[in-house]
Amino acid sequence: MIATLTTRHAPTTGTPGRWLLAGLAIALLAGAPTVQAEDSRLAEARACAAQSSRLARLQCYDALFRDHPDAAQEQDPRSPLWQDVAAQEAERAADDVGLLVRETPDTVLMSAPALGTVPPRPLLVISCDDAITRFQLHLSEPLEAPRAPLRLQGAGVALDQTWRVLDAGHVLSGGRGLPAIATLKRLLGTEQLTLASERPAIDGLRFDVSGLRSAVAPLRAMCRW
Image 1 (tube, one colour):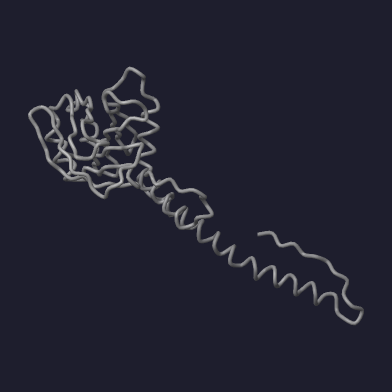
Image 2 (cartoon, rainbow, N blue to C red):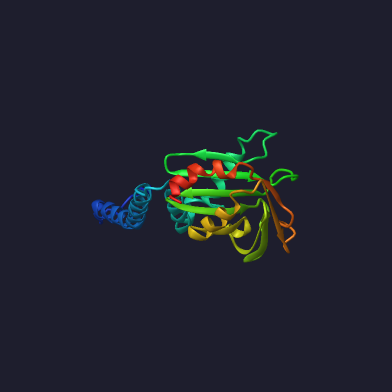
């Protein structure tokens, strides 16, 4: 904070130094809360930087911005994982509709677009970050419901589940950790995955997951299943 001091002519009977000292005191008192707030925010940012997982760091920074609205005027309700998937899909070749896999030292990210749809397409997402497996469906248009019952169909498999709606409707979560792993193991032999649901936005979505068993190997190794 920058304090602006306005110089005034003091009466001849007063003491000029007194007015200057008073002005400095007011400026210091006014600036103290701002300095303390900045110090607190810096400490919180350092704590975020100390997170071992990239996704955990991004989530920490996101929470920090939410706590300090002046740091980010508009908050995007979509998670760092959603943003990472969108960035990955932006690199997809126009004629590629299969599984796209990206590996980093601490994450494995897999995505596939819904067949027969136009961009921005619904995306099937499988990820491993911080040794946690996630199975999700990402939507560009939010789904206005807390949960979505659906059926996953493929290769002699039909699984009836209820997925949670997250990220202000942009993400349907098929679970994390053991529930996600259990579902994925049932789908390893599937070539094309079809979703059936009472929700029109996701009913009939189809995904090319051919080669899933081999493509998911790096993710299984990182998440140890």
